[in-house]
Length: 412
Ligand code: ADP
Ligand code: MG
Image 1 (cartoon, helix red, strand yellow):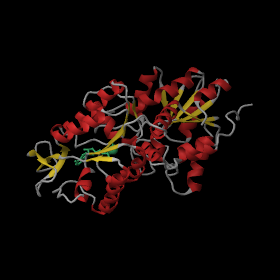
Image 2 (cartoon, rainbow, N blue to C red):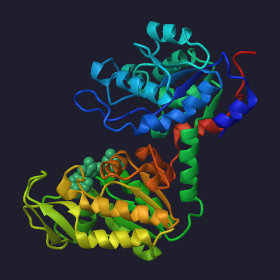
Image 3 (spheres, protein in one colour):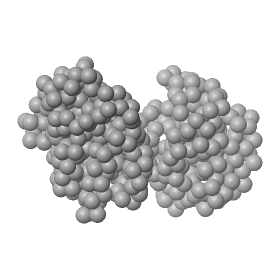
Image 4 (cartoon, rainbow, N blue to C red):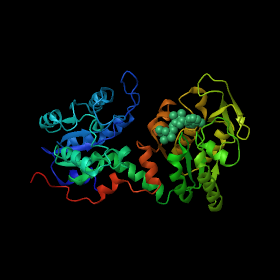
């Protein structure tokens, strides 16, 4: 995979238009203000390296889930403003993706200046399953630039026009963020320092089942909390009341428990849970043993005994990967389990372990709980992408960068 450094070492970027696919998919509040600018900050190094080299930088990204046509609430306008502040130079926002406004804005760029196209998902070609429709959009995107830099790690598992098809149309390299994320994932999959402990939580078991299967061959311990723990508890024969449960996943989960036992991989499940009467911050709640969850209650956090056991396992590790909060941490009464695991990761980091946090909500949780980014070895910007990588799947946005083609081209 060729990188920005290769590009800078090989050619003068002054006068060259470089299309950068960034991941700027930040959460907005109902006033349209950015509530966590982590992804914008993570996109800055690549863009800054290109502007410093004199390139004319055309950034493209998506925000939220518009359905293939413009919707004001998904405009990248707040992102353009924040990106400009962080770069210390204005960012010109086009009013469309590949239309007249985009062309005019790109044509107006001087060396070292930055433009941002409007939300890529305002165009149905971006996410289309139809190769021709996606390709047509990618043609238009490619016509705006001479070179392509793939830096949206959060989307590299998607076969989308701005991620995959455009890389087939322009000389391309990986940006510094994609490069850093891939380095971290390689470290997790190629001979990780042991013990290697993985903590999984969050809401949807089915999204994370595939990764469990492959983690059973690499990790030494698997700690399972969050909503997904209840499918595991139920698979072991416990009643889980009204807790999150994926009935159709019980059989695969039983399979994993058995495989883990055969391979000597320890699976830690909660032994106690915080059981509430409702999914609400002010609901009545109490700590109960995991095998005695009342039928009318739902488990919204791991209990203190589980939190201690999970923390001890994490603190004893040399490598830790954590994806998914331990409870409904957005509500104060159910944030303790997530905070305990986060604290244990910080302690492990200080003791020299390699610690990685992946997942949008997990990253938001540690920031909400007041931890700093450098309390951990790495905070991944792409939850889905990192899980699919760990699962051993092929990521279209990464494999397309492998067959590199010439990085020069365009202007002779
Ligand atoms: P990530 O984005 O880090 O991959 P997920 O999206 O899988 O994490 O899950 C995050 C969500 O899971 C959070 O919004 C949190 O409130 C929710 N959650 C965690 N534990 C529970 C639980 N026991 N019951 C219901 N929701 C939960
Ligand atoms: Mg999430």
